[in-house]
Image (cartoon, rainbow, N blue to C red; front, side):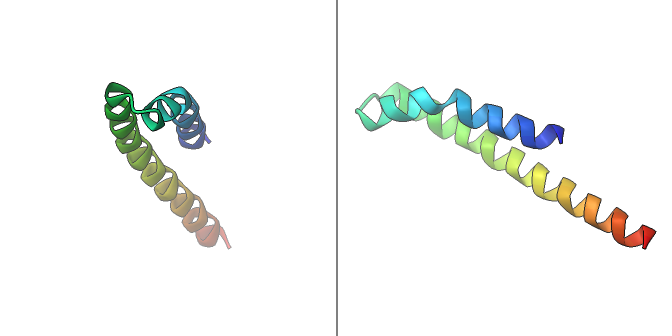
Length: 61
């Protein structure tokens, strides 16, 4: 599923910045917060896609 792969990629990309933000790097914290908004939106897209798959399966039954 394309949406899930995008979600995984987003999380992997911000891993270094998360550790930098924990160390007090304010710029890294800003990047993490921005990226987490993208993660939130992508997670919602995954949820929507899962529901579409489930509804399609139920319609076939």
